[in-house]
Length: 310
Image (tube, rainbow, N blue to C red; front, side, top):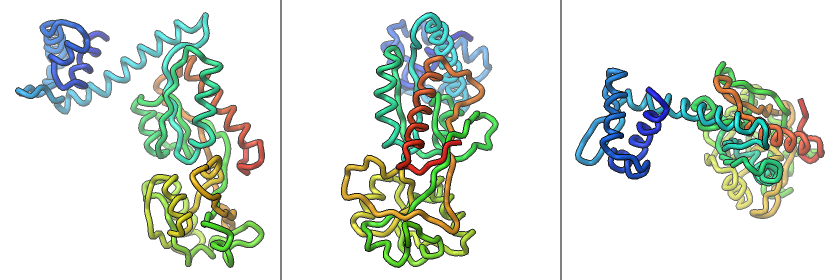
């Protein structure tokens, strides 16, 4: 087995056809077929089911796809890391950001990376923290931000800061009788109707845990995982929501929501920068990570976020 065979194998899997893979790679079809046959003989398994419509990976083929992607990415990372030692960093970096932090981080990170690292191609992806942890382990993401420490030993994370969560309503009148002096005791949230993400979302889990500790249950009438649409629904009077100040920053999609800090108990969560410990970070990835950490620390120190640096 060599890297060329793995590249041919992945091309077949991605195109679903040996012919299409040969055309994309500009390699003769018999040569690709020979390399595939050699791989199957080496492993003693069938990697693809053949049919008139093309090929589909078997369960063994699916397992090799996961390994091949990691192996080839590690090889590419090693090449780029060594090439960049005497120069500015070179390579491609994928950075994952939880949805509630995208507004304050994505654009500044892209702009500063372009200015400071002209030979680095940055891809920013947005998702829930749980998905980001999975992508880190699978090698689909180089560096990412996570809420809370990950118990998984395959991820190395560093705590950056903690942020508090706030009750948000469409206007000040929506918080009347609930908030006093900018604070909203948790037990007063029980009569409200809420628009929140689904139960698999980390924010929802944290809020539900806090509600149980406060001895109440929340009336979640709408579940939707898109923060922009949650805020839109709250503006339209569909209910209240719970989010961080970072999730509201720079929101130009409508009138500002009214917020109150949740107390008794205060609800807070920690933000971590993370990568898979099974693969060393390239120089390019380390530099992008440094830029991201600098942006977050500066925002946390500015005061508006009311986040506490760790």
